[in-house]
Image (cartoon, rainbow, N blue to C red; front, side):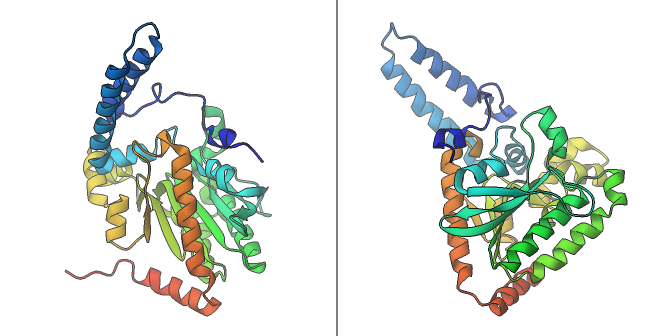
Length: 329
């Protein structure tokens, strides 16, 4: 097994090199603190202590009052942990399975089996790349029809052997190319929705970053839907919504507000079941703490499902999804 240090290693880039626009004051203060710490010939311990308190207060104030559009930006942060980062951290003996047995192996969708806290599990999820080369290979996390068919093939294996399924959702949407459409993108997603609704295995789905449209739903039908605090889950991206409604991508900020795509909005609307808290400053600043909390919540969700009979499991899943969209004024 990889060491904890290796598990936590996401990228060589420093947070001071990659940051979001609203994080600039935080990064500048961090750089100032690091400069003071490097001056060994002068005792600046009191100044450093004061600056660190100011940094914590600034970070807390910033992240406790994020707008929906800013949360979308955090969900897309290039240093944010991806599916395989979590797999390396808390899925032991993971063996990846490839191919849909029809066309090819889609690298934007990762599937396989491993052990999670003493139980054998099936794992499926979107995977983005860390650099341009890997992103091209993984289609920026946008799966093709063969990706969804591969996911369903592996989930059917999980059902056959009575294993729970953990699904990691992190995609801007299904791949929109002509080839994907020719090979039945919409049919593949629709087929997964139908089949996942009837799978006899417990399913825990987690939105870890972007949850975009049908691309997310293709592996998103679950008994428990968890969502990281700064992820988003929406029928369309804010940019796509702005382009359709206003013919102006600059309206993305307003679109993000109107779409009700944040974890707080979705918990209130009963689309998701649980918000997984992120450490101060977001998951990209403290992967280990995020992974520990996510593993804890996944285990809790699985424990709540393991005692259910097949009939209770399927009836609960049916009722859960039938209630979505029902409201009273």
